[in-house]
Image (cartoon, rainbow, N blue to C red; front, top):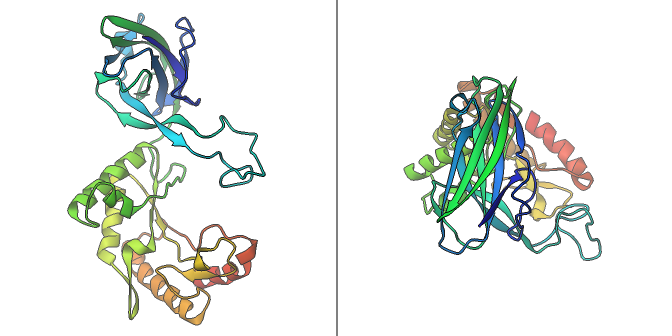
Length: 337
């Protein structure tokens, strides 16, 4: 068995090889409230081999330097096509020369929480080690020894965490606004849950907790999650809206991202006009204006009642371009009104 530490910010592939066991111990600079991270590449394994991962402080300040480790197994994901030179995926007549590797290939990306020991799924495994640094931690140097054990073999690796006095504040109202769009439907479907059932609400909270852990402080609410189109027009489910906001607020998020009022007509990227979301009419038509006004009035009634005015960010339509700039200019006037 061979093992070595790798920079957590550099790509790592399943066919990577351990280069040297005598490399100098890396030093990780981290602010208080931040997280030091390392990757551990392990090769020369047999499928089913049990592994034990451990970390202990070393050096003169061993007792004072303990940080609680969090271990993850890195999972390889397929990259089927390279990113395009000027957007989307690479085109046959326009190769992208600025790539890390020619597709198809696999790269370690997904993180699976583990509790040692683990069993090898093949000859090579990769792990990620997190060392969260509390906001009240004392600045200074912490030395650590990481041990990877398999049977009678043990590889010992050294690392240093240099904690600085600077602080990374908790994610929330005053941290940099950051969002990742997600699918309420997929969160239900991938876990075999009924939409808006109690198990679904609980799963949403688990996802929200992970988002906040990654410093996300903004969550979106697509109109389709809270509105239903009826013969009398769009109708807001105010109770569902309030519960969504409650779930994500309780997890530590602040900014509320109102879903898009409109989308490109026919789903065509270069379409010159937009349609109202919820399978509505042309957004800048008389009927579209009426839809948008109805949606906006219902939303503002709840926003004012709950005093969310200073938290609410509102989308109009995604990524307008020159081909639909004229319709977008009219559309934003309708939404703003």
